[in-house]
Length: 180
Image 1 (tube, rainbow, N blue to C red):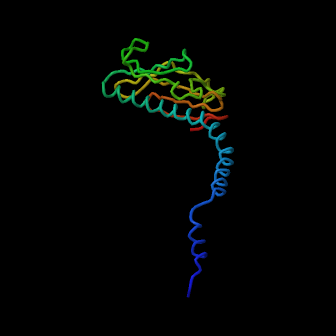
Image 2 (tube, one colour; image 1 turned 180 degrees about the horizontal axis):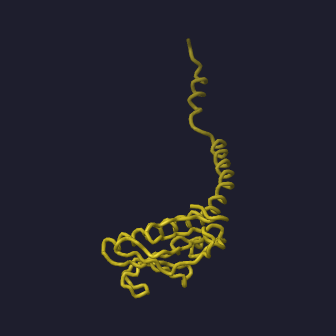
Image 3 (cartoon, rainbow, N blue to C red; image 1 turned 135 degrees about the vertical axis):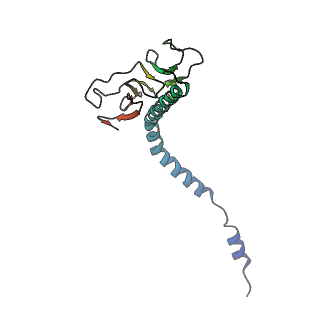
């Protein structure tokens, strides 16, 4: 049997993809990104707020462990006078930030993350949403009770970080009502 050379060459020349196929793929990617990018941009402030709240919980745990380790009181102070605010471990007990003390800037999160209650008008017990100026952990791991509220520029979601006298730390999220 003799094979026709044109048939063999035709099959060999069909490897790869055409310019039209590439353009169709790019068009599909462009259409999908038109819908996806705005949703990602809208969700970004809420993700940053959640990260700030979780970092606050972690840093409060860190202060508690430091108080236990050093066998002394560690006060975490919240400075709401600056916009956005910051918090620090007042290890020198002078009620002001001193160089060398642990400090965390809320500006690192961008998206307007700051201290605030968002649209919350009452806490989970029906009381006022009062921001603690400081929370102190003592050498036994217990603490003074206090709430810290964080919001983003949209002010549609608020996180409350609560420290109980037992030293336990609770994180709550607020939409239109409080939930754990």
